[in-house]
Length: 308
Length: 253
Image (tube, rainbow over all chains, first blue to last red; front, side, top):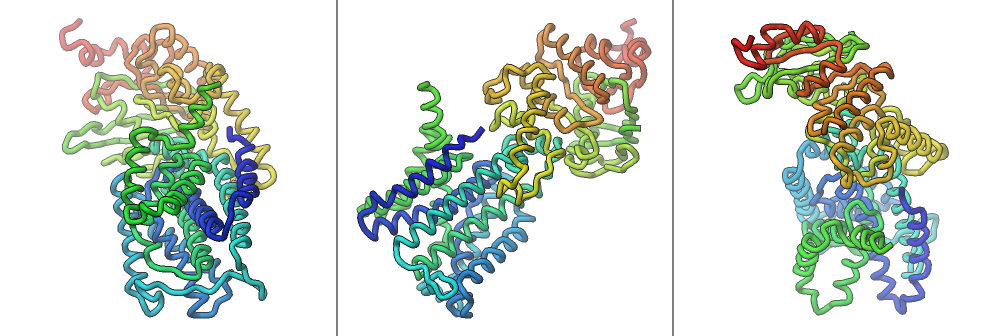
């Protein structure tokens, strides 16, 4: 049974956090946390709940970002229309690619999604006429009906509201028959099938959904930053996203948010580690696996429950 | 005819595990499939639930040809099962396992799930109540909110039965329901099988425990080396010389 207080607690954090944000830079970090958390909430549905690995979600993030960027900057689309169109396109792509690769299991699925991410990343670098190549491209701001979303505070509230919406959607799904079907796949695929759950269809559905979460966060990140480079679609970013989910806690929506918060903030404050960022992520992954394989939030929950 | 199979064959890398087995399961009686180890009993169950595709032969369920279809299609046609090596969803509580079993009977679109549309909360309460009722039925009322990974073996066997019943099957296949149970638990299992049958569900069990088989079943299929050795009433099968030979060796009489 979910704790109904969870979403309210997260809302309280979002509302009260600005009191502890002294300047624009800290707002910027908080916004990045929120955007990464949206990706992780979606990715956690796939990895944590349905038990399917993806090492290519930065590819969907990048496609969402570049889709919205190219449609607005090169073709003059209104930003909201561009965002919706790239979301739909990424969903369609995930559906088409997911059909064959989700037949694979374990390492094979990991390799296939890894390949998918690398292909996306190469295309973004080489199609420089559209994407600006490795140097990236600038992106017009988000806005509609003559009004533009600008300033750190406005973005903070927008991203905060969207994060709450993402968490709300994910938790609704998990506590529905469809969510139980996904968890059943993780528990035992053959047992899920013999109670009538079409495993292929459900895996594909959650893959598409998680890709669209990533694409939405990607598009928002591009419009917020005003600039996008292919590194956001690269393999290392996929690994960062998976690390956030695993560290925060698989099959825990708040774990995904906490994982994104800790691992987005850490490199910002430990700037000395800038060149060693990937080493830090690697170390976090190893230490998590050794000392709390269930991840931070589930481990803490268990410890609290044992205290009582 | 609830489920009928003709001439079922299955090979594993050149070894013929099942060789031309046919059976007709009519609604009503409790059926048992027995045979020495390696006779092909579990292979037969896996074929009858779509987990394996037969190399030859056909399977029909209430007149519909299901040969080569996926397991979820068999489930939708009313065939449920449990597993010899347990396949419990260990990432869920006992109650959630059974609630998951109701998948085929829960009407829930993706939009309704994501947006928690009106009616979802009531549907969820109803689903929970149904699942709780089934846990009571199999005698697991004390384990309702337990994490399934914390439950003992005997309780997990019952949990699998409750989960299978949640899908409201017409036919329930039980793969060695008494394996690993002590004599008291075996007697409880025999009573549970009787109560399932009296709900109008046709039960087929694969079982080594002959006392249980003779006690609960009205039809017995004997397999040996992937072939049908005998098929009929328990008393007739028990006195069949070929069955005695397969179990005890030639010249036992």
